[in-house]
Length: 160
Image 1 (cartoon, one colour):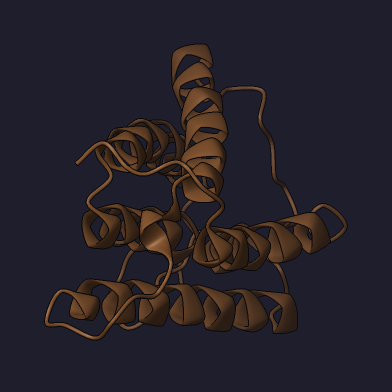
Image 2 (tube, rainbow, N blue to C red):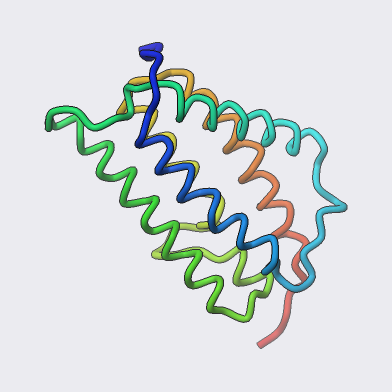
């Protein structure tokens, strides 16, 4: 429940899948992106969650693949969500890079850029039975998804 200390290659793969598109995003931010009105409290919660998720994903070996069992379904669904996250990023990078594109959903999942990795890491924590990752992801989700909701509400409504 509390995890076994050791390196997680699965955690490393997830973090690489998370960080690479975010690093590319720095040069491809949506037109009109503005962080001046973000909640400082949500930003602190998000940062704490980011740090704790990164550490937890790497230092607990419980996320590494073991013998197949029904419990492995958690890892499969989690990995599928991370692949869907990558697909969402490809779609964003090929778009006009508007705020609507950035805060879009995919296959009915709202705010896919924020929700998919949060859910994927939560399921990874369940798969590994590591409470530290689960708690860290909850913090990350509150901050990250909360900030995305704030940004989405500030997008001017356009008539079509």
